[in-house]
Image 1 (cartoon, protein in one colour):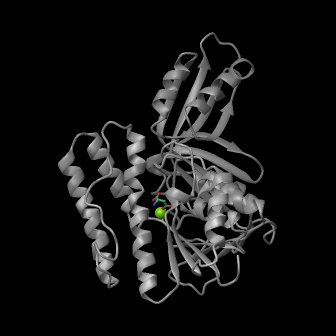
Image 2: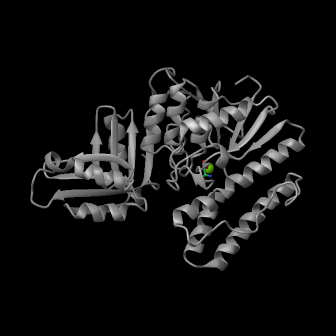
Image 3: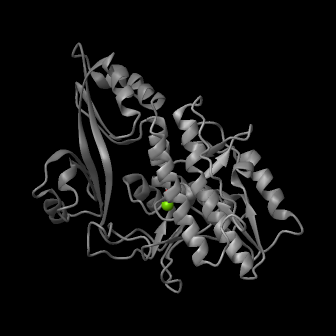
Length: 393
Ligand code: ASP
Ligand code: MG
């Protein structure tokens, strides 16, 4: 990729993805009027932006009146057809706007270029096919300098749209960076860069100017929302640096994530992973859970697509903290066939990296700790959710 070439990956505008999710929910519940009203709101929101930018809705940007929903198809498949509209709209608006500013721009339709399987809502990317198609598109002799593409969405071999999991645009950018051997990838955010805590929870935050890939993976796994967890691997493979920078201050340098960084992070880092559930399994016959059933437990976890954030065991029980997704109830049913299962919901996992006894003391005070795991430098506390926000660590 040459210096003046730019691949711009864009996600949906504002809260469009959430709004589109509500459209699917309403249709699924048989409430067509509610779905349509919501759909019209979404279109209106985009029309207003187009007008602000001096574009002609319907002429410069195609607007579909119809919701791409087919009641004979499964919910998740419909979800992907509808929710992907957010990115299709935002990228068209921006590409046309840039064109009208006199820039050399091309719009790419990622459902045709980024090949995935049909694991709806969490599609897996076929790297080989995607890389070949995307490189061929990029290497065309008449390609303009700037390409605008959708993040978060791809498509199956038979032409259905898919999505890569919420907040997946970062991941798309990393994949394209990898396929095209980008010099660097920059994620533009509404925060100054990677911070040591979520500024919505903790008012006193500091910027971490330099991190290693391994730190970034750990932070995003612990729940830091700054980067999608799948983003790092494609970049790390090719040693492509990742910058996280504030879009409201394009001159600020933000954070750089790279192989070596400037060494380990030297401030305590607080990361919340919200919306957690703690599932505890106890063997029905008081056998030792760990010795006899571990593979069974992990098989059920894997088959039901649970995302595990923490595991703790004793002689006769094993507890796993998982994201409270829609897959949990069926997993619990499966686990109940083998174990006595109990669970707590409405929990959060707080990870503190670079903790000290004093910091840990403060974090625990006034909170109901369901479970804790500490090593010398890292503490992980599972706490009740309503105590999450109100109290600073
Ligand atoms: N628009 C998608 C979402 O809100 C993808 C993204 O923002 O990265 O989840
Ligand atoms: Mg987003």
